[in-house]
Image (cartoon, rainbow, N blue to C red; front, side, top):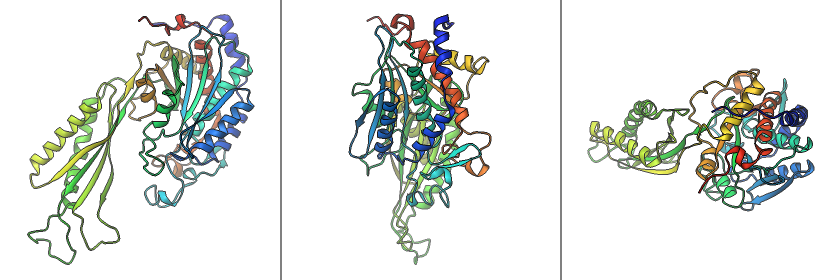
Length: 442
């Protein structure tokens, strides 16, 4: 379906707002925000900072508390009425603690992009979360600021929100935070709109994302003692059979991906954690070895179906290795979700991308990254994901390894995405709900 072009008046509003995008202002905000430590479950300082920043820009804003150390941030520009409401959203928590607790699991040392301090090098901003999520937070804030500063006459409300708990983690200490609990709190407590736009890494527009399923596989044996011979009849290792299970799962995972790939999603799976015994009691081999598995799920493959496929894989492993004893369970699940590609917000985001990039929007590479977007869609809001080049060409090789890129940002790059966001804001919030299809028949 062809998406309508902007009218002459709307084009003028877009041009006026886009001309106000200030790369230096974004650089300063990105630096200030990166310097505020906001690991999952302790995001309140960053959220409070953004509420103050929005208020100084003349935007109505408030903190949505989720405990002593955690909070969401919300901003709003009220429309005159009759138009669709639009939510701009990004998480605000980082994926690491940024201290010695991350070692050695994040590497032998913490690199500059893994700690909550700010370094500027060759135009790059380096620090924990500088790109994901702090560049996203920055870009959305600038888009809302320029729309207000340009005096764009919005018919529908423009909402801006940042939530904690967005990382795919489950942290017991801060109150079982993570797994999109912040955005769920946000949307079930008054912040709900006709459409949503979310900024994530990747210079493309997506209408669907995967969910995730976590599994724990416990391989059983008996506790042993290192002074005993290996052929002791009453001793059974849990660690050596677990190695066989790991290799068998690693062989199965590509077949799972091939079986469940379609559309914009190619769901991957990874063996993420293996745990066994006591490091302080090395002489006593453990009776249990635990294997933790993250399996991403396609929007059209619900978690129950993923569980059934994992059950098939484990049954096959046990058939080939009847000597192995194990138990397993699914420990977490977040279903994926899609928005109809013909929906207004998807077509608007693609049109904005094409206007700014000056070329047709390509078919994006398939993704496997789980995001808060699936929660937003599953809670009833049609959502488009748009993004930017999240790993600048000038990023040093040493900062590209692993999750390299999450802590390296380049403001001129995300300024391009800001312009795309402004296009969709003008395109959507200056029209009536009927024009955008937001009015739905009963």
